[in-house]
Length: 81
Image 1 (cartoon, rainbow, N blue to C red):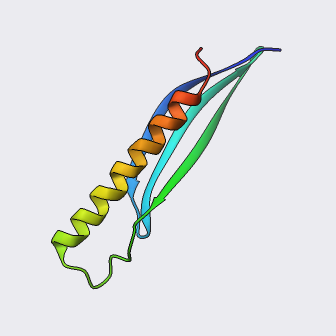
Image 2: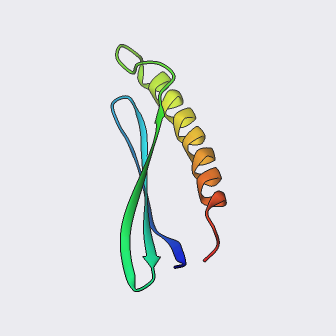
């Protein structure tokens, strides 16, 4: 039985300890179709408490940049459908 995966959605949102991305897949196996979720967490390099807003913005931007790199790797590895 052949299975195929296609990406339905990618969500990204900041959390308390890092950026969180969820990749929603539709996996087709024969006549069945299922939905799978893969979660990727990119932690901030330092805690956000007691930091000034400019530093918080830089820390979050760096985490988002790293998360986007990891997402490109995951999406690039998936088999073509």
